[in-house]
Length: 248
Image (tube, rainbow, N blue to C red):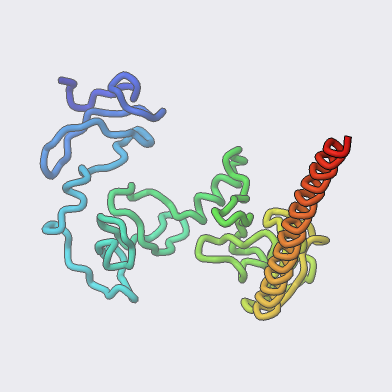
C-alpha cells in the first residue's frame, strides 16, 4: 500500500497519461486513490462520489435562466442527457460565468481564454481551424475581430461564410447562405463560393436532385435497352450459324 502524498509516474501504477499522479485521500469520505497532479497540486480535491452527492449540494440561489455564481444543478435540469452535476462559475481570467463540470479544477479557464493563451504562447496544438462531423471547416474568431458577430457560442465561424464575408467586406446575415459550387464542403476558395438565400439554396439543391434523378433514370433505361439489344444480336448470330450448318 503506497503512502499518502507519494508521487509516481502513471505507468508505474497501471494508469494512462503523462502527468504524475499522487496517492491522495478525499477530505470528505477519506477514500484513497491515485489523483493526477496539475501544477504540483491534485487535479480534483474530492472524489467523484463526494463531488456529485446530491445531499451535500447547496440549494441554487438563482433560476436556470438567470443563475447566480456557484449555483449547482444536474445536467438533466440544464437540458443535457449526461449524468452528474454542473456548476455556474466565473472564468478566473475574463470573469465570464458559464456552466462547467463540477469536478473540474477551480482554476480552469473558459475555451475562449484557453485559445487566446495557446495563441499567445505559440502552441503547436492551436491552429484555430477544425473540421465538423458534417464536413465543414470552422475557424476560431477572437472577440475583438470585426467578424465575431457571425460566431457561435464557442467563437467559431464556418470558413466558407468567413471567406465570403471578408470578400464582401461585411458580416453576413442569418438568412444568407454560402453555396459550394462543386459540392465539396471543404473547398472554400472564393471562386467556388456563391452567395444565396435559404429559399434559393433549397430550390437549387432540389433541382439538382431532380435533374440527377431523371438523368440516372434515363441512363438506367438506356443501359437496359442496350443489354437487351446485345442479347438479341447474340441469339441472331447463333441462329445464323445453326442454319449454315444445316444447309451444308
